[in-house]
Image 1 (cartoon, each protein chain N blue to C red):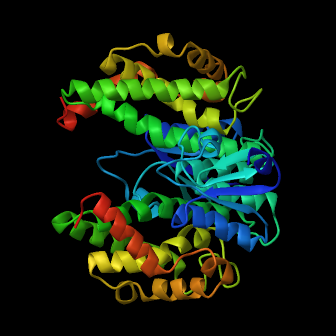
Image 2: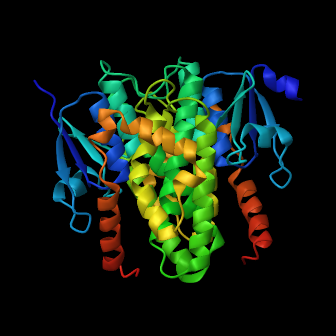
Image 3: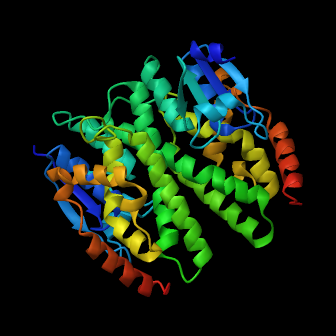
Length: 221
Length: 223
């Protein structure tokens, strides 16, 4: 029986995009279902009753939730493709640590920048914090081509979708990530050379437009 | 001191931390000998700051001189290095479920618990409602099983949640409710955990935890 894989997500969701890259790396065929986050489908609410969030991977009818859990699941089920996590337990722990760090820091910090409603101090502090976070990641990358070493790995997949949100952060925050973190931007360009990334990730200008619209809708202008 | 950290297994921890206790329980479940180092959180050791420069927090597991940080990541590391008596199931879907619920415990219980003891009035009432909802969801996942890991397996989710059972008395007293009344199955699970040596030897008396929270409340000017 053929595998049936469905991904419930939203085109601009950084967490959903991670899963899309992972599926692409493993060459898994799947059906993408776009969710309207203001009008969630009954399938989403049934599949993720606890958090009611995207992404949700539904594999042969069984839902898996939380992007980091989903990616580890994909890595364990589709073993023919490249390994997304390292084999060595210490390196795995390290990869999980940085993915956890990325998950806890960039999204909330970035939100404080673009969702800001006229509070210059909060925005300035968030900008400084984001630059600090990205510099820490730059430090962790070091001289390697990818966080995964010679090839794209778990941490790369966790981080690279945020690169399409950089334009949003930069425009609202009035700063340049290229200027602050050139090594990280070089890493972004290396990631974009991979089809699994370039075919999946959305245009940063489209993301920006979407965020502008969302800001209006949420009354944050 | 640094030389001792080069060998074997060292755990940098703080006595009442439920996150540290997860690691202690996991190490005990696997029968791993380790050196326990108590940290003074108001005066963190150079070793802690060196080993966890990003967060500067406990717990940190140091194995052959290399640090592992973040309690659930440490537990998974312990699971992978000492692979007997597995805490995680072998089936990928069941593993994903276990990781999901451990992550849920991680995201929800401590944050809500802190609101419950730190806040007053309406905000505290809301925290109480949230805590009952969180515990009911966990109870739903437990079902009629002996442990979250199954009938025989004290697993990953059990390890993630068990330390918080020592905080139940604090939550109940601050929120003026009874976990036994609201979530009898979860309360029964908590009792079964206490009967497990690896848990009872890692946790502190709930009244000691309550006393500690009392001191924190004074420190934060909450009464």
